[in-house]
Length: 404
Image (cartoon, rainbow, N blue to C red; front, side):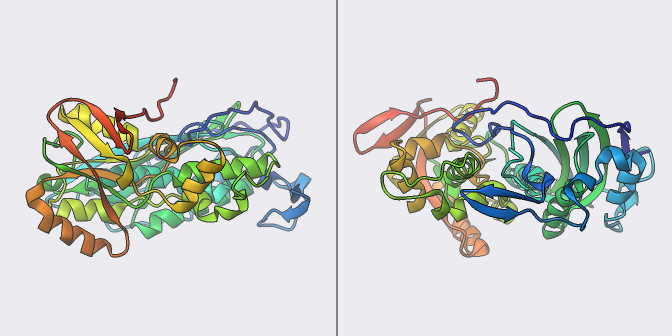
């Protein structure tokens, strides 16, 4: 029943799946899972105060329809009824596959990323719309790193029987909000049944002119190393949200409580893909190499250095780390620089640029307005990855890696 297909058998399982907590300090692919999720009940208590969960219908919690109640075909119709149909979509949902007309003079760029409950998000504190937001945003971040303009997406959902339909509506709300903001059409997808966690898989398609493609492999000795925005925010946001969920909201030794890092929590829950920055870097031909920060800045530095066969030195004093982030880690007894280098989910762009291209880089900055671009290091011939600190040179820490 494509491009939406699926296998959601009717039937009832227990309302809530109790899965073990996964503990980690880095946010990308490490969030824990404890059920029931917050939106499966009408109210809950955090730190002594009752919080009423939003609901789309007035029926009691035990009467909320689940995906098993609704059934596969009705669920597909519920989603596809909300999708836009651009002129370049020749065949959309309802056939075996989507057919799109290619953008004239451009190449197609494909990327895919999956969000797995208990690995990439924790439903205790990541609401349905935030799950949908993240699922598409992380894919658009990949397109941005390639200098591509987002165009279309495919959405695959693997759903537990007991998941509320209301949660699916919220998930689609979040995903379509990001799609609308970036001119992306959801042209099809897939639905299947999960015996355990919720899984959201997105494939995104963009377009780019041949001479504007950005890759990881173009850095050369002497290039400057730059990053957009700030780093380390999402890790602090995740840790704050975990602390709230664990009902252990206590001020640290500096008096900084979890309720004081709202902006960092938002950075984790609803990352902003730097699509404009990627398009500006590509359009001005200002970057020699580029990568997004999904698994941490240290990981991206390693990836660009390996692909370009160069070394990179990072200046710790130049790293754009917010004061709230520094205070949070100081309060936990951690090095803010190391934590911000290792933490993931920031979805900023790390790129290199030739010294002769400073004029192009100024054009990029003008195009981006208030989004800062910070020079944080330099590319070297010697294939070493070095962090320069006030105490001297040391090896750059690692980033996040699955299965490690």
